[in-house]
Length: 389
Image 1 (tube, helix red, strand yellow):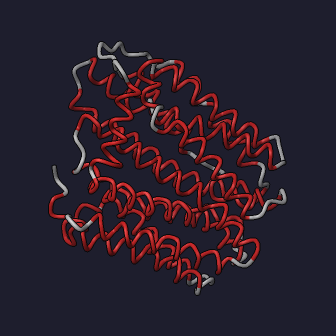
Image 2 (cartoon, helix red, strand yellow; image 1 turned 120 degrees about the vertical axis):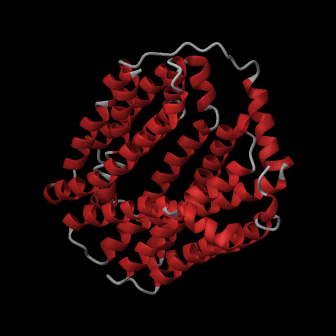
Image 3 (cartoon, rainbow, N blue to C red; image 1 turned 60 degrees about the vertical axis):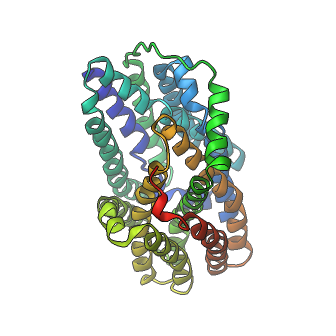
């Protein structure tokens, strides 16, 4: 049990200690890529993740959690290795496919193996404690890596990628030392079961569908803004060494806001909370568009506070409307929707930035979020008093 848990800690670190994130747009720009190219790359990553998001759990069930984790860690390492020694858009595209596939394989198996491990030793009551620790390790690793990534990039934009490949490699031996847990329960007809849950979530249960779609548009909006941060810093001619510090502060802001999300939600209630999230997410895009100065960083700070509120609160609403035997699959459907929406709009937003301006791209993004977001919010909260099944 201890060996599996320690190995899962290392795998989490190998995935989340992301030195390259604060400076990756700078890296792309150095190799001749525009923001449209950047968003295309990230859309390809999302498509790769989307393709396996829902079935990855099933693959872990029938093939084995350990095997999925080993393959996922290998692909993750190869993705960063590809980035480290190539300089073309096509090579970066291949790297994103490797990273997206590897990430999803790990996501579909790590929590399952953790629960299986605690169950085998009759320690299921400790599952949430260990899951919480793994999540905390990931969040703090990402925040700390931001600082080091910025400092390494001040010497060379290639240096964080070399270090990232080494860090990603540590997940491979950690995955190999995992011990597979025998399971007696096998899914008899997983394809039919997945189809049944998708139909229930997006067709039969209208209220659940509206909540999933609203959570999807908000999730896509916050993910898109995350990729606007570096173009904003580049527009402001921010010193490279500060990229990691700013990235770290923003990610810590999300974490601390998430800690208060339950209290904020209890105070405002589902309807008002949904309105507040939409107003501040859309308002963040508009305000930043007209404040492309260092004062705009304060707007990003507020935006990231509501990003921290939005994820746990909107996932909480979905959990309250979902039966326990389909909860994990329904949340995978939500992640699928977020990635699909991002993949659909991101290249267009990048094109707007390259052809017109950063301000135009931000304003159009606000409109894309506001119109469907407002409609979905209306229907998702029209029966907010009945969201608990």
